[in-house]
Image (cartoon, rainbow, N blue to C red; front, top):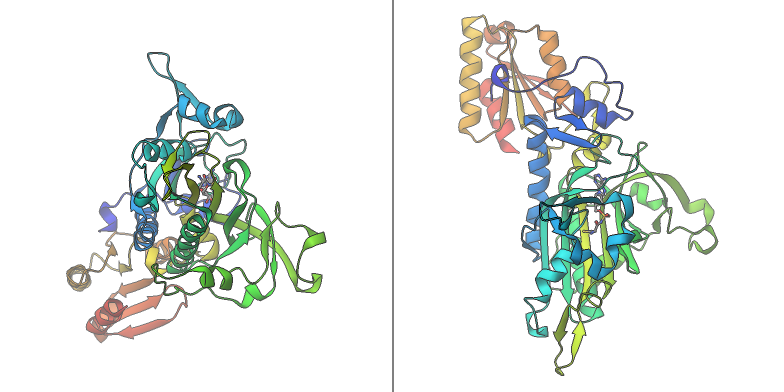
Length: 438
Ligand code: 5CA
């Protein structure tokens, strides 16, 4: 993509409405634009990141055996009356009437809708277990939408739902999602610590939040100091095996959110306990028959008796993640994208587009990078070198390739690694090899 043609509305000044670094940088780097409170448009650069995040989430859901569906954003009120949540949900729910005066709502979550889907399709334990997910926009009329896409009113969520015959089966499904979440966040280079959590309005008695430690976090969290030294790798998981050891391993060190933590019953001594702020990037719940019982989602067990399905639900804040990733990956000059979610792999800068030799060399390298399947943003604009460097640092692509008259004379280009700041003068061929190697 040529920057001269790209829709990248950068902001020079720090926007006054942005209180935290990720919100500031997303606005300045032309990733998002606010439409109204807590509601955003995603511009080309931001949408690329959102899609990469979404794709990693999708691949790991698929790998765990979850099947993708797509349920509507608009739901009928009757379903929520059946579960008893229509009134409970209060002002956070956006309630709508259609032209026939039927009560509808913009879904804040989908437990009811997916339960209705399954109760009319699955009648026997032989069709279990099932794990279904979708990646769909939600609306919650939050009291305080803030921090950009971190707490939006309209936001993109991955929500998965599990259906099992009994609680042992439901725990196996819970463990699958638990392991899938460890892999998902690790692939994004994000350390998201699983913490015991309060299930809130979703319900149930077993629940974990996956928390990215960040000063700008909205939750207070309490955890064993060992977590600071523990990295969460992309673990190998065979989803056909018993995953309880993985669950045990990654919940062995104490970690709990504010609502769940109780100083009196905390199992570790105060000297080992740390407290910090965190951002919730995922939340998983086991709530048994909370929805299946009132909604009569029953299956026949092996003895022929009808029992309510055992269910869990599993959310990831897809549109919150780009911001959480920026909180964890930035410096004074701007964003530093992890490779797996970077909007482009390489930024190519032509320092002197008016110079025929520079243009020829830069066009040639641009063609070769694209030929090698590398996503590249090519700064071919007629701007000062300083402005070009600042733009590339701000938008945070993992590697920068710089072509200028001095390099042309020496037969080299400059390769700058955004995260380390390391620079090398190398031939264009070597640079091509380097960026295609990873
Ligand atoms: N039905 C369950 C799980 S599928 C559910 O709704 N869980 S949740 O309420 O915890 O939301 C799931 C995830 O969505 C959260 O972990 C968080 O990352 C994200 N999320 C929740 N509210 C917002 C919001 N207002 N803006 C952006 N992301 C949000």
